[in-house]
Image (cartoon, rainbow, N blue to C red; front, top):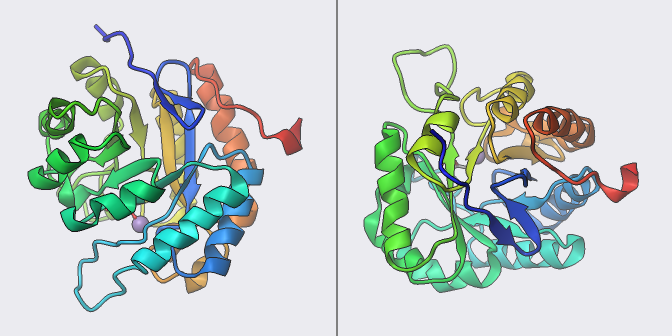
Length: 269
Ligand code: PEP
Ligand code: MN
């Protein structure tokens, strides 16, 4: 039995219920030019929100950690220019006000899904939050992470399946698409799928996106780059910006079959 769905309004876009969100953009905000170029491409292709990390949780402490506040300013400019709401990650509770000032949706990454201090602080804000499933988290644990935010009075929570660690080594993570119907049984919150991080390579991203839409996801959060070969982070899985419009159109068609609505971009009408 599926619960009645909660519908969230994010700057005029609805997610949950019939509304399908297409969240697209770079893994990482690398520069003003890179981010604005990608933002323009995804806006023209019909994205409903822009993603991009200014603070990046990296496996190695010696890897690029993100542009920080400078990255947030770039996202603010991208939002003003395209009108797209911004989804960006918060990794440190000390940055909550800075990130919430720019973000329409705060992303809690897989590595921070059980950072309860971070979740509690976000719960005190009125900013929407997208919580990614931890690398080894059960769905029950993901739903409990959401409860930390809800308990503080912030009801604007989105759940995200992004792949889990299993014994399989043929790809980065195992994308658990059964999480979509299962989470809908456990919770009334919108459920989106990240089809980028599990395959780790772009030629498998579209099929996982279509499958996610068919499974009833309320949206997709996908990585797109204007020059994937030179991306600082996650280049091999980034969709080239020029292919985004065709990709979004195909995902839209499957989402429609699954009973969802993603507005067609003005340029294509
Ligand atoms: C990301 O979205 O770029 C990211 C770091 O995701 P995750 O937390 O799912 O690894
Ligand atoms: Mn990434």
